[in-house]
Length: 221
Ligand SMILES: C[S@@+](CC[C@H](N)C(=O)[O-])C[C@H]1O[C@@H](n2cnc3c(N)ncnc32)[C@H](O)[C@@H]1O
Image 1: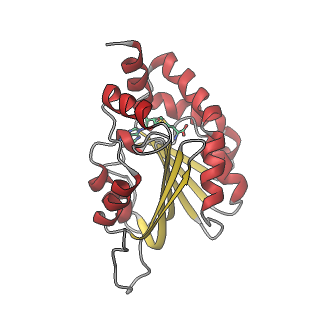
Image 2 (image 1 turned 90 degrees about the vertical axis):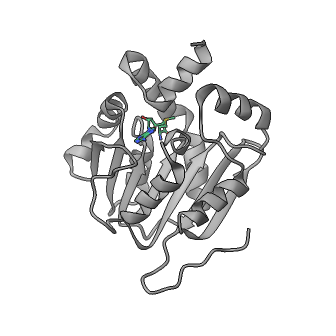
Image 3 (image 1 turned 30 degrees about the horizontal axis):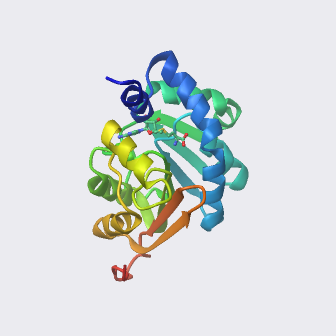
């Protein structure tokens, strides 16, 4: 395995001391993208939030500042990521504001309709089956809730050729923004919004679970 493939496998599932180092690094590196994404979407009414693939937990800490009354949960299937997330948020965890646990996105350990906001930053490319996993997120989401996928590896953007290389080497499920929109619609999200920060090469895509009783619909692409 070449160096880049190894590094991407560490991003997919951080392991050992390198994994912990990487999770800390991603806390720093992903902060500007996370701030940008959270400024694109209204989240202020969120009361119960899940960060999927929470990594080193920096986004959970940001959300705790933005949403002082919300209950915040993070899951990750990497114990090394969770160790860093636990350290990053030790005070908030002790105060009972943040809860983290080891879990796979494909089988979430939560009851139906638990969260009103679900966010995943630089994580969805690594999930086993994006459409099915988005359906699992929809299961644990309340009616009227939203999912936000954020990242910098997608096709058709400013860094298209770099991203095609990363996707091939790292076996990442990358798509164009139009394809991602379609995937969210297929997973029965409504009112899908796509935001792109072209200069930075970031995207943020938002899907909604319609309020109870409202007919689902698929918006025009
Ligand atoms: C590139 S890191 C991003 C971490 C964090 N969201 C951030 O922005 O710094 C991807 C994270 O997603 C987690 N992950 C990948 N696939 C997952 C899955 N199927 N279930 C749960 N977590 C997953 C990895 O373990 C890793 O911690």
